[in-house]
Structure formats: structure tokens, C-alpha cells
Length: 419
Image (cartoon, rainbow, N blue to C red; front, side, top):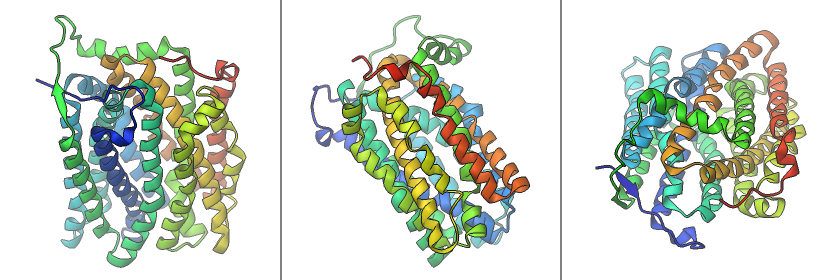
């Protein structure tokens, strides 16, 4: 019989005293660091070792995110029907094996772009299933009044990984080469699997008779719920537009730093790490900022206010001018954290527990499904307009995503109603 995670149901209880949450948090922190290490190592491996073109490098981003477009909805149905913890453990172990295969194949002298594409694509499929289950797990671990705090801590870990991961990646690449850094990423996923294994579970009550719906009907339930919630529709529009242009920029950022700014691998890592400081600070203050501004108001303010600073990214120059890139990236990181904490917490509170996997999957299907298209746009723009002009187009698009929430009823709200 499937198992459910044991929740600390005492309202007001500090998450620092929740064993299950701390295990989830610590495992994801290590996993996120490993992911960020490979996030720098993959394009550098393709660019420096396999001599890939800018467009070929952008295809790695496409393959990493394309599974969200193809598998998100079925993954949501799966996550609502199976033991989510076991699903996440299996995905972690599968990704560990895939990534650890890169240095093995490199040592054998058979590493090529086709193999790297296969590893990235298959890892992406496992990441989809993991992410859908993961985003449905927190409400099962903590009470509703701690969701903002829990999401803030998890997002802070992601930003901390952005801070440490690229620097560690740059150092490791300089010491042992890009291929061997994948050993570290594989080990990080193993650690995540172990922490998930240690989370306590309780027997789940049997589902009500007739409660199981057909696969086709289940696939549409998440989208149907979103359509009936006007605020979720606005959040979906903002997130989708932002992700499209963010990935267009991300797919060409490393080539821009290497080929336009002539930054060494260590400098590339340091620039991304320095930029992540904004997200770390925002994550630490997210719950406090939401209380001060309002849980609804913080969404559109966070999206609109930092936008002009994004322009510093394409204005960066060689030498000390790379600090402009870091400053613009820091502004974007802060926006991402504040918006995501408020938006995800709202979605978790208004969605029934038994439907959350499918609603999260529907969001991922659309919000992450546009990412490979954005990555293709980034590669195409860079190929035809040049890296700097392409980045300018991308950051303007990132800022324009705020229009969905700025021009919405959210502007007349301070807080969401308690759920």
C-alpha cells in the first residue's frame, strides 16, 4: 500500500524542529549544489572539449527541458497514484547513474555530443517525475501556516546552490576537467536519495471506492482546476513568459561569458555565484517581505521592480565589466525567489491535496514546456544577431512577463485570504 509522509500538524511549530522537513531540506540542498555544478560543467564540456557551436550548446538546454513538455501531465497522474517518496528516490538514483557515466565514457575515449545529448535528455525525464512529486510533498510535511516559510527555506537552498555550485564547478573543472566533475553531481543525487529514505512515513488510508478516474480524465483535471482559479491563470501566464525568455538567455550566457567577455571557467563560476547572492538574501527575507508588502502584492512588485537592472547583463564588458553581469543576475535571482515563494505557496494552499500532483504537473507542462522553445530562440537569436544583442532581447522579454500580474486584480489586493 502507498505511504504518506508524516506531517507536523501543530500550528506555529518551528520548521527547525521538524525532522522530516529538515531531511527533505538538507537532501535538496546537496542535490541543488550538484545540479548547479553540472549546469556549468555541461556547456563547458560541450564548448571546450567537444568544440560545439553556440547552437549545439543551446540544444543541450532544449533536451534538458523538453521532457517537461512531453511527460509532465502523465508524471502528475503518476505522482498522485504512487508513493511519492519512493518515486523521488528512484529518480535520484537513476540520475546519479546517468551522470556518473559521463566520466566513464570520457575515460574510455568515446565521449561525444550524441552521448551527452542522451544523458541530458534521459536525466530530464527523471527530473520531471521527481519535480512533480517534490512540489506535492511539502504540504504533506508541514502545516498550511508554514508553507511560505518552508518554500522560502527550500528556495533559499536553491539560491545558495546557485551561489556555491558554479564556483565549485569552475574550480573542479580547472583541477580535474569538465567530465570528471560529473562524479560530484552523481554523489549529490545519492545523498538526496538517502535523506528521502530516512523520512518517516505513515500508512495511508485506502482510497474511496470509485475515486480512481481514467488516465485521460486525470490528465485534464489539473488544467481544469487552474482554469477555474483566475489568479492561478495569471500566475501561469507570468511564469510561462518569464521561463521562455529566461531560458533563451540561459542557453547563451556561458558562450557570452566565454567568447564575448573572454572569462576563464573559474571566472564564469564566480560570476554566477556572485549573482546568486541576490536570491540568497531574498530567500532569507522572503517570509518577512511577504508579511510587510502582503502575500498578494509581493508577487507583482517582485516581478516589476527589478526589471531595469536586468539590462546590466548585456551591458557587461571584459575584465571588471563582468561585475555588471553579476549585478543584473543578482536582481533577477531576487525577483525569482520572492515571486516563486509567494506563487507556489498560494498554489499549494488553494489546491486540494489529492489534486496537487496534477495541478503542479499542469503548471510544469506549460511553464517548463516553453523552456526548450526559449532555448531554441536564444540559440537562433545569437546565431543571427550576435550574443550581446540576443541577450538584450531576452532580458527585455524577461521583464515584460511582469505585465500578466501587474495588469491583473492582484494590484488591488494586499493579501490572499487565509486558506
